[in-house]
Image 1 (cartoon, rainbow, N blue to C red):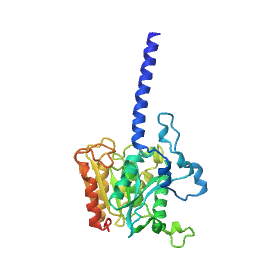
Image 2 (cartoon, one colour; image 1 turned 180 degrees about the vertical axis):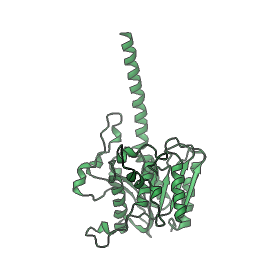
Image 3 (cartoon, rainbow, N blue to C red; image 1 turned 30 degrees about the horizontal axis):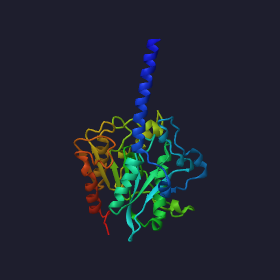
Image 4 (cartoon, rainbow, N blue to C red; image 1 turned 45 degrees about the horizontal axis):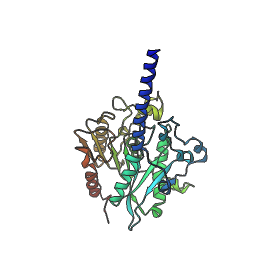
Length: 318
């Protein structure tokens, strides 16, 4: 009986600790979705046949905040436009989360607010956490949608970039290599628009699904036994061409989650293809640091990014 009580106590203690950790984790990654949040929401047009398969997985308490009920109606953007003239550059933000959640606060809304302070419009994508190609379809549709609605959001459609963190960085790299230029004769005006981003920003990104560089999340995107050709297709460093958009890449050499070699591989592929790229491998840092203002080395990345954007003519505060 005493042993049973001890075991029960240990189980309850572990549950309590896990609950506190989960709540603290959720508080940082998932925002309060009140009226101000809903005012920024813009749903993407997706086929009606796909809307029955858009919702997040349902997690038990204390992980219930992982579930986003707004996804039941489809993928959507949180819009942070710059209303002052002239039209501005814009960035589509893809939060990370291993393709099983989205770090919507740290790697989404806070990044959007920082970009706004630099005179850059921003849009956080709540993409579907479903197997390929759903997340990429949502990303491509978001890019087409923003170009088609450039006047509505006061955007320069020729300065539309993409930024991804961790698994969101993998999605950004896929969008930068598996895009299409649109079909001029398409009935749907959105399909006439290009899904190619004009530039990309990859933060501690998963890039390769090939061993030994993959970070263990590919089963969430493609299942447990993908064909080798499929792994190659979704390893963005193997899909780079001279038409791949320029990239700003940063990570930390000590990242315990995503090996820094992912960033090196994509940077080397861009260099070999003659694509402008700037890669920063900071000597020390943690995974998931977002704006990294508490990091010793990576805290400079926002300033370095702005210089890079200026040099390529993508920032250009007016």
